[in-house]
Amino acid sequence: MPKQIGLDAARHRNLEGREKQPWFRRTALALLTLLPLLALLNVFGQQPSTSSGQGTAAGLRVSAPETVRGGLLFQARFDIDARLPIEKPVLHLAGGWLENLTLNTLEPSPTDEAWKRGGLELTFLPVPAGGRLTVFIQYQVNPTAVGRQSQNVALMDGQTVLVNVYRTLTVLP
Image 1: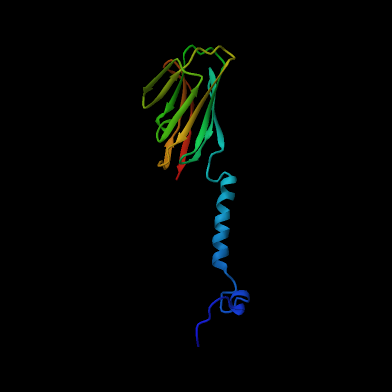
Image 2: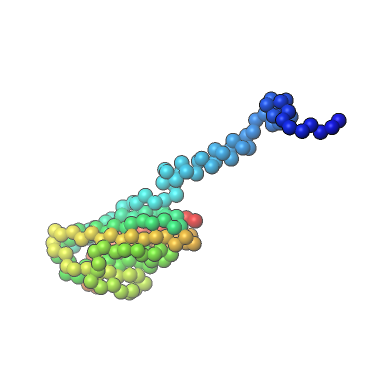
């Protein structure tokens, strides 16, 4: 019998000889639509979370994502509430605040920056008792970064530690 050229109503319209329930294709399509839905529900990170610590002289609140993806731009916010005067406020950021992250901007500008004790130390102007200092840092995650890293923060007055906040950052591919 010669091979038929063109469309065949039985095969192409009525699907004779074809799979009646294309479950594989439906499952693949459902999985593809599930990924954006999970991203909207913050399963893959980006939404900031707040960690805080309290001491007798000051309180420190850190707001930043705990889970990020490669290439993502995000902001970290550090709120320092002074109960007593802080003559030389220093934010000591663990190495994880710079490992596989690009620091884009930092506001307000510190009076001094130094790499000490395995982390970045940012020194600011004095904060009076009852005053607040808010520091914003904008980052971008390096696209090749993957893993977990410590993002601990210490608030110091000169060399004296006032408050510690312990955090971990997870970088997804």
